[in-house]
Length: 189
Image (tube, rainbow, N blue to C red; front, top):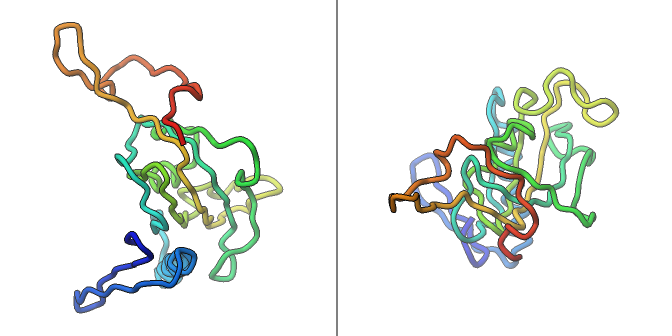
């Protein structure tokens, strides 16, 4: 995915191709279909597949960074999108998440690394990286592959700070647990 409705890719002979789409929606829809095609052509889906839909701006998120996201989740059925099983898109509340905290499925932790504020990504998550053999009663059948479209609305990066001796200290290396972020600590939309 490139700015101004472009997508670029390489073919089998490492020849570079670019496609310009008539609209952002057409480029996004094409990118989703590419991700689904990658999934359907994999003999075994043993890791998270992801496809950027919009790149976003700023620094990419890493473990320890916090973000607020809007998302929709579908069951992957009959080689494509099945029914929606969860979404917060039409709700007032965004999902707050700290990467690396282990509070969400492993596929999200892995699939959202490197996302930027304003970025949108399509994730296809195999059962082992989602809810596995237990599923979620009444919503996600056991051994389900899941598809998510996630959009990063706000980001709070773990920042560099200065120690008492003037040395630069990264709070990523700090053994102290970080406080729970409040809404004021996120960058503005």
